[in-house]
Image (cartoon, rainbow, N blue to C red; front, side, top):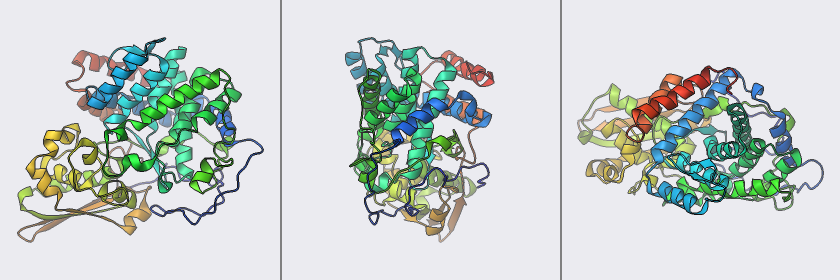
Length: 483
């Protein structure tokens, strides 16, 4: 996998003073950082960055990648319509979000800006087919910002260019914090930096001044979700906790807009985020650029981003070596550490007892088994009726997932996996891949995102509306001004 053009950790911007943190290593040896309660705070730095950037700071290539992510997010949201947890979110928004209901709910109806932000975030996130940012020690889903920033822009009557600029700010803030802070290693969910990024992006959309933007970031930064949401057994809340962050954060942004202040040193202060993590956090926001898009990955298959490689490898093996799945004796998957921890039976818990969508999309044994049987992993493969079929339940028990030191050392520049299938007649087949469509070095083309959009919305919106939506995107990407 080529790494040309991919971003790497920026030492000039991440002066933490701590040694590099290896994937899978718990940083218990770090001394608690000395609190900082003087000078410009990290929250103030975020506010300055949010005010400083312009639409023109996005290079044409990065601008296109952001637009592709927006269309991808819309496809995910449409696909989530009708799922029981998202129906609950929509019903709640319509019941309690009626005051000043001027913001559109994806799928129909309106709510106020706070409930629209939360509901649309749930829709984008729930299916688990949205974008991801891959850092060296953690990851996040920048598209978790789309629902909140879109609601804030609609509430304030902003243009498409203003929407993209505010969204770019949010993407970058979340990615920067993900790049330097080992949230998951210390038991915090990967949505922890989302509160800061929504605070920044929504403030930009509402055109708050620097002081109130800083206050918004400070207030929102006090929303801290726990990693337990991703550990076995996985509940439906895994797909909704970013919606809860959006709900709380948008409330905080509007309180800040009314003059409410927040904890200035929420990151580096006494008992702040850095103290909770046991690691200093210092980002030189004056030198931060809008470059996180170089490390954005989009999903081809309906699973966590660390498992995309294993699924793609399995399907490639199936195509290269046709055989009867009934003849399989064992399946071995060698993956990088994050893939093992998230989906292979590592520190997030065992992965062979699979009976729900949430179990299935974070279980490599299930995903590899269903990929060998069906040749694909889409929402249809995560339906309860498919999950419970005897063929896949039997086959997933034959899958062993192992972390591989060499593959781990190559992550995140290389997203490699290796799958070996052994048959009853003694034959064995091995496939190894180093990337996949949608990986940072193989970003989706407009043709590929069009195809994914069509697949995701099929049967949920009529053909005319689907083509109308895509034509708007064609005009959008062809417009130099994006107004």
